Length: 416
Image (cartoon, rainbow, N blue to C red; front, side, top):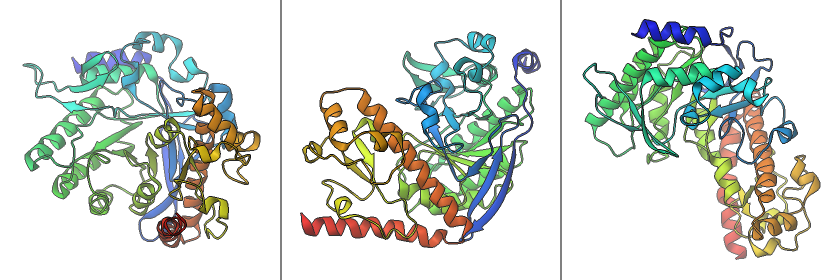
């Protein structure tokens, strides 16, 4: 049965050259920069890098004509969830069009498919002992088996894709963590068996919850498989930030250094810096989306020395030195850009007062302008991270960023 499915997928699969990844510099032991080549994808991606979170292939509020306004090629790596294509359009329709690149006209962009969307695991589904994952979709909860998942991957034709994973929250029992690892490994084996490319574009999923032993066991098992990289799941699900370094360390100690590592669920600047310090290369999260939806704009200084914080930034109402809430009435007559000196389309053409007005009258243009700025600003943050690693000063940059936010909150408290 698996052979028949594999032959079926091979007829429609868009074969690419094998993905290549090379580490270029290291700082503070684990933090590293690298270059990722995705086969026929024309733009090499420098890591650590942010994957732009999308809904069916495009960021939530940035249209196709506005994508070029973002820094290139930093913004050319997009994260998609195959779950968004469960209902419409069908896998056959997308396959007949030629895949997601053809359907969206994004030939110079790379797609990484990760199926992270409220996974809840089920026991064995039938007598043939085939496992399936239960996903929450817009049409209710759906059971997806590896064969159906691989059919979606075959039709979407992403540059990279992560295998199915049984993610569990931090508070589950040790037994449940063991089951999670067992299922994830079995799903990986099934996905590779059905992949006509033989694992050349797959990121093997590594889970294990809050258990160091299970994280280690999963990493050891996945490292033995023929995969091109690793997708580290199970974070952002209730674990404490103080627990993460040990959990990440036990995984990255085992995974081969010459292959890329992606993580989901970590979006805050502090979380990103913490993961970079542990050797993570690729990040995808909904952080920018939730900021934008809430009316927040990123404002923290994009300066490694961070000596240029203006008085206006220090006095921003509600600021935590990372963002401001543009819904606040204090910005109603503020004719300044979101961030002085920012080169993004929003800051070059619009003021805080205008975005405050758009938010208060519930115009979608507010979200469009905010997402452009927030994406542009956060990509700049990742660029600073790479520069600090290349210069061997990542530890200093990390420490200054954390201390700067703490000192800022103290200053705001004194003036409030």
